[in-house]
Image 1 (cartoon, rainbow, N blue to C red):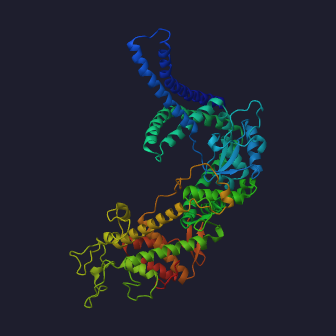
Image 2: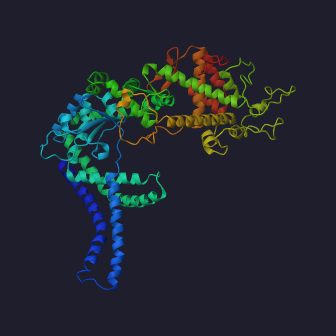
Image 3: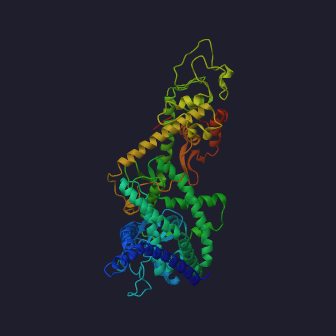
Length: 636
């Protein structure tokens, strides 16, 4: 499809959308027109008689009601604020070279120049219409050079050009030529967007979409809810009617833009598309493995975009993706087009934390930035010790004594042996008072170690047996239901009863702490936060009442939480008894360094303990590393 053919297809679909708008207006005006004809017929002597009178007095109120409804729909569509993507605005003073590159690109494509540039913490780029009054008017041309009016006659000013939104990882990972090649088809889309019919159809569709969102809110009284329900139904009907035409219109615009961009850096664009896929993979890995643990600790990495470069460089080094990476990294990176890359990186990093995790718009005592150099000490070490402290608090609530069940009990204090012994040796319900029998030895009885097999009859000390240990451990926990399948169902199938009980307790404790943190964040949301360079660029009109807008991962399961807490306890023991250090792996996140070497085989040993209740493999691993599990560790 040629560029002109794509534009014609998009324009024909836009006219179809506008025809639907015209038909809706005609339907709304038709009863009023008939009522006017009937009313005018009275003084002229036409339409007289009882039947015509009944028709007049019936149709006139109906016409008035239809007009009021149509006016209400039109008012809601006109006043509703269309959705706006959360971005960090980039002024031309902050990136003159970037604006110059976009302007030159638009001149080569013979299309209008975007009215502004903004960055988003995502691996994508698009054009966004922000001409709605609620979004604020775009700055006049004299305030930002010729970025809005280049190539257009001053007396033939068309629709304001859209804003160019660029994925921030592209600026740091791509070279200047690669970024220009990737942006070429996006910038080319400003040509069809400037067509009056296409712009009018887009405004109508966006208005309907915003009206549906407004009428779906449930924060009004019953009268308003009833009225808005009717208006929302009409808006949905109109939106469904023009859905196909709007989709085909956008396809035509995209086809026209892609065809027009064929003449600009086509060969380089093919190579650059490979970098788009790499940037997406590295960005996703960095957010889920590295940034998310820091966000959960109340710290947000302030150089995420610089981190994605380190992550992708490490990925290329490990997997040998391409031999030309070294020479490619020697070229000028696209972030050099910014005057202050560090400030922009900090702003987009804070926006990413808010979008993917939630949090305030500025720094505070429970929400502060962290640099990559401080990440191991301020995030990894703190995370491990916090998880280890939570694990021992849960063991305290279960009544597990330090060193209970061990042949050589260690000193009082948080030890790794306490965890291993509890998950290894079965016994009576920890919440019950012990009833020692001097004539019996629980350690010499092999039947007491059969965790997976419940006793034929209830134990003499009142314990509920191994199978009842899950429900007994869950019952006292506030907010935990023993019948909750999420806690004791599929997730914990295949684990020992004690592992399941401990995982359920930890899940409840984590949920309680998360609810308390959410309440604290809500109570301090209205309080002023410390102004930072990052928060200065986030004054956007997008709705942030439902943060996080894009959660990265579902809540961790009980099995995952238990594995994380046991791993954290092992790492704390390694740091305090062996001198190991916390580290940061760009692809895997927090990691343990023993003698400067990254430990990779610990998760398998931990899962064997959780699933089989057998600590042999983990104890052998600890012995090989020289870690002493009976020594107390330091917690937060």
